[in-house]
Length: 280
Image 1: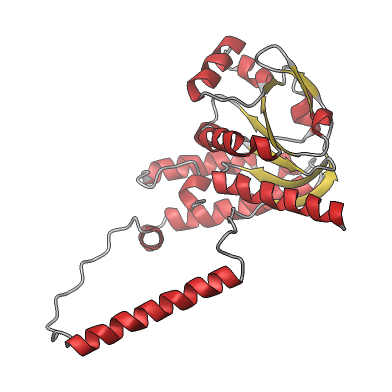
Image 2: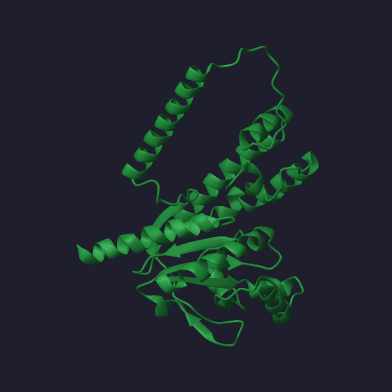
């Protein structure tokens, strides 16, 4: 679940100093001067994320607002209810309450199934676009090559990441789980490592390999050694993920941490849409 805390890359017990520092760091990423040269789609996403950051900061930096928000999440301290004298329900009243509850639950389940919501996986909102995905061919960490064009006809998730990026680390189990569960159904995941930035920070490809082995990632890890692919996709904050439909069009862009439900929801939608188009 995406919360104000995950938006800032923090845990719910973060101090106010940590909230301030995280906010200032994230705010710099979405500075208007930095996003001015981006294409309209990415600039709009940056503006939306900037507004979300402002709202998160206003809430978490204020003690009263933060307490109310934490209680909404179920992590705040809630005052114990005052003890009040109350008479015991009679057997007839208890039966009526039980029957009424069962009827209500039955109605909810019926509506849920009838509307098709029971089988639907919900992901967090993402930026919707519709533009061709830049093709690329990169060497992978295991010495092979991966080309986006080879996966025409499949739903592809291209995930840009770095070993230093904490949100990137947190989403890796979801990416690996999605790969294990849905690769045979047509989902392709390509992790593009910002290798030029890794080198700038003193990390080698052996360090990247050890990191990948630690998380037991089985999907291809492509090495963007000169930053060209990162630039062609107009990536600036990490992690950034692109959901590409079977026709090679970027349909969704997500800046930030992905969950398993996010991946399932987008994959299911794009695959179902492609199948519907093929049969129409």
